[in-house]
Image (tube, rainbow, N blue to C red):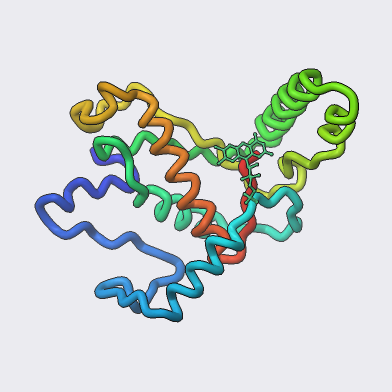
Length: 182
Ligand SMILES: Cc1cc2nc3c(=O)[nH]c(=O)nc-3n(C[C@H](O)[C@H](O)[C@H](O)COP(=O)(O)O)c2cc1C
C-alpha cells in the first residue's frame, strides 16, 4: 500500500495528479513566466512565521490539500518519512500547549539579565489561538526506499521532513493561511 503522496510509481507511469481544491490550468505544461517568478518571490518573502491568528474556521479539505502538496517534497531515498497528524482533540491540544510552556520556561532559564527579560517578552507560539494544530513527525524506521543516502547520514530523514514543512508553509501562505512553526 503506497503512503499518502507516494508518487514512486511515477518511475514507470505518469503519477496521478492529486485532487485539489484549486485546480491550476497550468498543471499539465506549466510555463513559469516572469509574472509568475515575481509572484513566487512575493510568496517566498511573505511566508513568515505567523504567531497571531484570526479565529476563522479552516476547511478540513484545505488542510488535506496542503498536506497533499507537502508530500510532493523531496526526501532522501524518496523515503517520504513525514507523518502529519491533525490534533483536534481539545485535551491533546491542551497537552501540546502545556508542553510548549514547559520547554519555553526551560529555555528562559538559560538566559540571564536583559536577555532573559527580552526573551520573556517574545511571542514564540500561537498555539492557543490557532484554529488548526498539525503535529509533524519523522518516521525514522520507515521501510520505504533501500537506505540510499540515509545509511551514511540518517539525519537526512528529519531534514526531509523539515523540507516538507517548508512546502506546506509556502502552500498555506499562497492560499491565505498563516502558519507558525510552534
Ligand atoms: C526547523 C525550524 C525550527 C523552528 N523552531 C522554532 C521554535 O522552536 N520556536 C519559534 O518560535 N519559532 C521557530 N521557528 C521559526 C523561526 O523562528 C522563524 O522561521 C525565523 O525566526 C525567521 O522568521 P520568518 O519565518 O518569519 O521569516 C523554527 C523554524 C524552523 C525552520
